[in-house]
Image: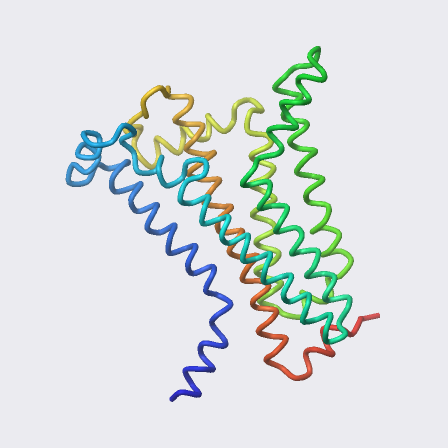
Length: 273
């Protein structure tokens, strides 16, 4: 029984980061739908009498709020897991595979810096100061798009240069590629959010579909801000949290498969012609 339990845990533990992220989002979205969208049992009215900002999704998904903090934790775990894996592979003489995971660890660290510090906003504001004769919004969008393209070069190079190694583990490949894709979509969407104000337009549709247009507008906000932040916070932060959990799970899945099968260490290092 103990051996069976140990084997089950060994097979399942790489999935834990994804399970934690999805479980958290299930709770957060349930609160949004039950309290904010449907005012079930009068919970929204009860909250409105006790909070200056009477919406649960604001506190859960705001900048630097619970969801973003969870994302920072996941990115930190992804960085530690990838760099630790790189150290183990390097010690085993699997230098190419080690370099791949080192690059992915550095990528996770850069993503954490970006998400926590928002340096792209600083660069966008600086570009407006340096080029005052240009359209400010167009210039900011261009700078942010270029910033995300530059940030993506490192993981893209790592995957193109060392793709043989992560793809040897099917679960690693699935988690890694899906996580990178989600972050790519979120990054492009964030950088282009003011093009034709599509964030606000899409947020208006989300408001109508999920809440029948009945969400409370936080104090000092208007309908534009409500619709904008439904996408910028509620949707975008959810996608990024799942992406961060997938990157962590990818490193753990590789570590599991690397230590699970005796021959995999050589298989992972062997190049295909």
